[in-house]
Image (cartoon, rainbow, N blue to C red; front, side):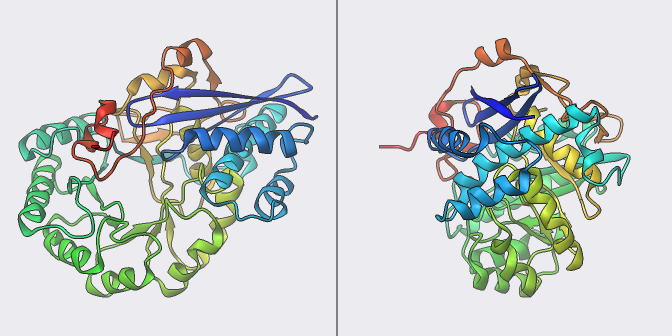
Length: 391
């Protein structure tokens, strides 16, 4: 079996564009991959086209470690975010093909079923203009959908430092969320790598009573020194990793015990194969994996299959119930969180279990949508103008 065609479809929303790759084999089987690229969709498309022509067309879809070597090593230049994301799209699609060829779900090829349910947490829900009372009601809506965890960045457009008044506003938002969801729902504090070590330590001190499930990217993700200072100042769990693209990126953090939960995004780290390679290493250091997932239903399906089989998995991120819920319609068989317990059921379809609906995709053309984290109103996720930097 050989791959003979690679098609690209881009679905647009105000704050993200979903780049979908469909690979077709000479036997007629197809496989899907998906990446939400951070602000560089055109660059990703160019990389996919170039690398597909060079390595993917004509390959046996089972030769995934060879494909990874070709893109990560054989290209000589370091792959980084773009190369690893292109590889991820190919890798997911190949796993989908292999599952369909064998008529089994992908998780069966990853070591089998480790868990019967896959817990999820909600993101993209806090579109309330940083008003604590509005956010309180939105948080109640998250719990009403069954979620037992939710994530929030209450810091507006803060960068490096944050004033005391703005810090107290963020705390008030978090207190409103805790009041709305009660003591048993996990609140994950997203900090988006905004802060200096000093500012992050101040935030960590002020949120102790909220008892967040983790502090996510309290400082820029490559700042080992500042993260070490945060680690020494708080007992709260620290999560990071969504902007780490290769295994060696983790090395200083894992060896010093600076991170408790690694949020590696399989769509930016070489796909399912790339994330599978981290399972044994992170497990050996007694830390958890909570995959970052900002994708539509295809990337979510890939992360779900990985999570079913991963022994040191913690929880899976999910946007699609709140931000752009129409993305469920771009495929048949989209994974959905069960409102009874806030978990994904284990998928049972062959491959990734989803089929592309091109007619629905065509209803949502490219928007230029991107993440403009340091512009006011970014958290609304509803208007393209929120993501255009002021001139």
